[in-house]
Image (cartoon, rainbow, N blue to C red; front, side, top):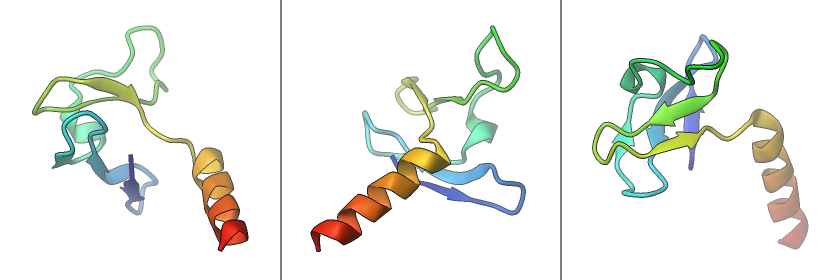
Length: 70
């Protein structure tokens, strides 16, 4: 899943890992996780698949490891 952050830090565009469609980040989910307001759960409006957005730390480590392999 790739997310492109906007000025507020929210993902502006997210690709669903299940169906592959792109959709606006938080705007797609009427509500996140019912247990927490800071939940990072996203919901694809095309297939209704719920998934957790990738954290900045995980994305950073992935970029570092890819550079190291090259």
